[in-house]
Image (cartoon, rainbow, N blue to C red; front, side, top):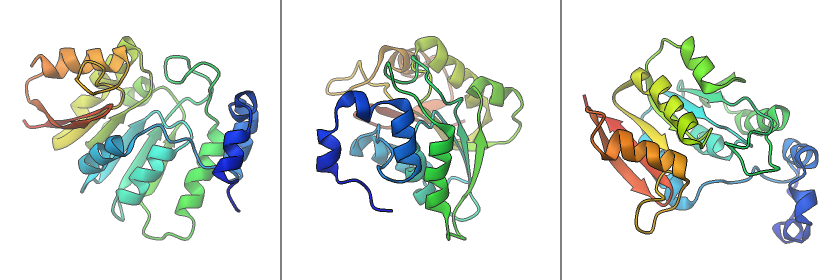
Length: 220
């Protein structure tokens, strides 16, 4: 199905473009692409961390743009676990925005259609801490991009970093508000500053960072 031209989308009033129900319908039917929340620099850091990963967890899926990026980068037989409670969550998305499970599932299904070599996608429609409570497998990459409050981001870090393999990564989005030329939000920025930059968490080191994104690697 053809995507509505970008010029026409720009002319659409914001109240219509961001209406949760109308947007979900358009994204789900493939009339418009999922909204990209990451810059080219952010994507580069994420893809570098995902190289060779066999099991990846993404926390905060929204419309699926970053999940599509990961899906295209992972090898055959890899697993991509997508965690999102969906709906409107003010600490994860700007006011008035919301994510639709139906629409996002359709976005990923279109990307997988006909691709026998595509990684396996596993959906977890829940809060990340709830999923972590029943988790037991080793993970090569955790992408934290859900609750952007300091408490929420810290809970994601504390819940998931014990499962990361040696040499594996945790990637934080919106975590560079304190860096010159960087961008981000106070919550994730403070979590990275207190748990990683201050050296409070031994065995972890920053492997790459740019724009709003920080990748940390488990070194021991």
